[in-house]
Length: 278
Image 1 (cartoon, helix red, strand yellow):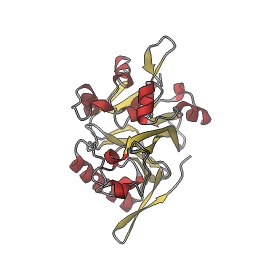
Image 2 (image 1 turned 60 degrees about the vertical axis):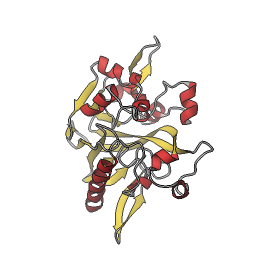
Image 3 (image 1 turned 90 degrees about the horizontal axis):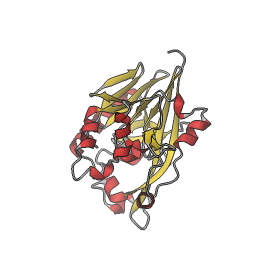
């Protein structure tokens, strides 16, 4: 493998999630100053994915919601039209060009685009030549979710990957290829993982649902749906400390206006310096 590393932040569109769930213990009087809610108390979130080109290989981090949704799902979640494949085409790529897919979790808003419906009506991997990297604990939770988490999983998103021997199970921290790593951060869900990339001498972190939006850079801002909020808090404190000290570029899986940026500590308060990734 030779050549340089490239990053492209791409989108699968948007989704609407209840603001109270997203911002946890923060009252609506506070979070509605950050994001406006619709009449159903839902706020709009981006479905951000990251394309990483390392030499002659293409890796995709997360796949958005995809297209396998009922009319009811589209209405409940305010889903926009899936954009992932069209955005890949603008980069000159087809699904066959993707060598690996890293899924930060098996929740449908991160994994839905991993599979598609074929012309025969069969659910098949969207990226036929790719290996899909998932934490072993994430798959175990998807097979046996609790009552709190069951609505987040859609078996058609991941069972076809397992049936086609496309899943590569990871335990904890691992290197996918030199310069591209995953690290378990299980606060949001069992087996949730973040992605760390060495790019041009700097560190890039795709934070998944550990820090889904720039507003969640505040340590106490943790979604009510997190399985282990104290674990989220502990891991987030360490990751953000490293990001400030080492100058990491942070990428937010659900950011809308601000999707990436550098974190700076000014007198004990954290500030984001947004940047654009194309």
